[in-house]
Amino acid sequence: MSEWNLNDGIEDVDDEEKVSFTGRDGTIYLIDADISKNEEHFFMCLSCIEEDLLKGILANSRDMVSVVFYNTKNSPPPSAQLTDNEDTNIISAENCATFIPLKPLSKNLIQYFKNFRQSSNFFNFNETHGISNGSSFSEALWLCSRLIIRCNYRLHRSRIILFTNNELPYMNGTKEQNDALIRAKDLLDNKIDVDLVPLVDEFNMDAFYMEFLSAASGIPPDELRLDSPATQREHMLHRHPRRNNRKSCLRHINFELADSVSLSCNIYSLTRKARKPNAINMLRENKEIVLAKRSYVVEQQSAEDPEEVVQREVLPGQMFKGQMICGKEILFSSDEMKKMKEIQDVGLRLLGFKPLAALKPRWMIKHCLFLYPSEKKINGSTKVFRALWEKCLEKEKYALCTLTMRRLTSPKYVALVPQTIASGGNDGFCIVFLPVETNIGVIDALVKPLPDVTPEQQSLSELLCKKLRFKYSPENFPNPALNLFYKRLEETVYDDEEMEDVIDATLPDLGRQDEQLVKYNILERFFMEFGTEDVVTSGKRGAGGQGDGTRAKTSKKDLSESQIEEAIRNGRIEAVTVPQIKDFIRSRNAHAPNGAKQALFEFSQRLID
Image (cartoon, rainbow, N blue to C red; front, side, top):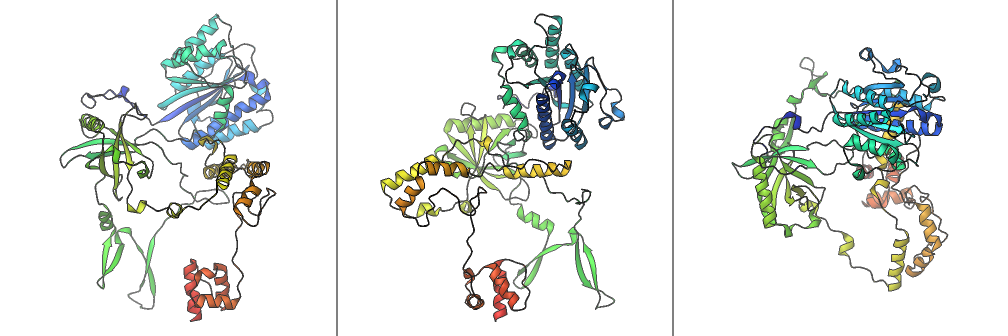
C-alpha cells in the first residue's frame, strides 16, 4: 500500500499517474528454434506454454497471447486458422516466425496449439521453419516489442517469456550483443517484462542473460534474484498459483462517524475463497448451451365455464407473500419484503471505542478485511481517516462499528483494529468480524472430564502422533474439487478423454502410515495398553480403508416385518432405517412418497392407524 499523503484528494491527480488493476495482459512466448533439435526439451517447452494458456483462459479469457520462434531458417506466415481479415499485415523479421499472432485467448487458439504439440513431427517443423546457423535474438526482441506496441487493445501488463538453451547467443563485446542490450533497455522503456525459462538445469546466467535481464528490469545485477530453471518450469506446469483474483477494491462504502460526519473508504479482501463458475446446461449431443426461462403460472376457473380450468402467467410484480395474523391473511409485495430486510444503509457506522486488550483472538470467526480511505466520493476523507487511525494507535483502542456490506443483508458487528507496516500489515484498519450468540458453541470434549491415563499410555499416544506426523505446506494440498472440476471442463471442451486422473492430495498416505505403524510395532502396544478388542495387528486395512479415505459403513440389524411394525407403532424412528420403512410401505400395497425419513415414518404410521 502506498504511503500516507495528507494532500491526497486536494490536488487533482493526472490520469497517467493513476494505477489501474483492470484490463488485458499481453504475453508473448519467444522460443529458440534451436530447442527443436532435442525433441524432449521441445516437447517440455510446448507443454509449459500449453499449461500457461489453459491457466490464462481460466483467469481472464480477454488476455492476449502470441507465440514467436526465432533462429528459424524460414519465416512462414501464421496458419489461416488463426488469422482473419484484420491480420492481413502480419509483422515479420529476418530469421523469425510469428507462429500465433497476438490474439485474445480462445478455444480454437488453444486447440490449435494442442494439436501442434501432440503431432508426430510438430506440423513438419523442420521443413516449414527450419533452424538457422546464426542468431536472430535482437530481431526477435524487436518483433515482440512491435507486436505489443501495435496491438489494438490497451494492455495492463506486457511480458515476454523466453525459452532457450543457449546461454550465450552472441560473443562478448560484439555489435550484436550491444544491440541486444539496447533492445533490453527499449523493453524497459515500453514497460515490457522479460522472463527467462531455460530448458536445461545447468545454465550459466552470468554468461549473458544476467546483464540482459538486469537491463530489461532496471535492477542491478547484484540485486537481481532469479529462480532455478527447474523451479521456473515447475511453476509453469503447476496450474494452481495462476488462479488468483484480480487486484481490485471489494466495496466502496461510507464510514459514518456521527450524524453529520462521514468519510468514504474502500474495503479490500485479504483472502478470497476459490469458487466454481456458475453451472451452464448443455445438450449432450452437440454441447450447445440451453437457455432456461422461469415463469409462474396459476390455475383458475374459467369465468364462462366453471368446470374448465385455465392457466394464467403471473408477473413478478403481481406476486405477493402472505402471513396469517389473528385469522387474517396479510399480503406483502416483493418491494415491501426488501424494505423490511434493510435494517441499516450500506456502510460503516461507529458505535464507540474499546481497548485493544479487550479484543480476544478467539473472537475472529472469519477472515479479516482491510479498510483504506478514498477520495472518490468525499474530499478530505484521507485526513479524517488518518486522524482516527493515529488516535487509535496512540490510545491503543479499536473502533466498534456495524458493517453492512450490501443491500438486503443484515449488519455485522466489527472491530476496526489499527495496524501499521511495522506490525506486518499495511497502514490502515483491519476489519475483524465479532461473534454473536449464534456463533458461540460448546465443544463436548472440553466440557466432559478428561479420562485418567497412565504415563505409559500418554507416552505411547505421543509416539503414535509423532510417527504419523509429516511436513505441511499449503502448496502441497490443491483443492481436489476444483482440480476435478477444471479437468472435467477441459475434457468436455477439447474432447480429450485420455487425460490423467486427478489425485486427491488431501487424503492420507495410508501406505506410509501402515509402514510406520508396523516398523515401530505401535498398534500392538497401543491395543495392549488400552485393551481394545478386534485388534488388527498386521497393519492391513479392512474394508473401506483401501486408500480412498472412507470408512466401511455398518448396517443396522435386520428386523422382521413384525418388529418393524412394532417400532413404527411405538414411534421409535431410530430403530428402523429408510429402506426398512420403504419395504414396509410397499408390503401394505402403498406407494412410498418422496421425502426425508421423518416424512416416510409418519406416512407409515398413518398406514397402521
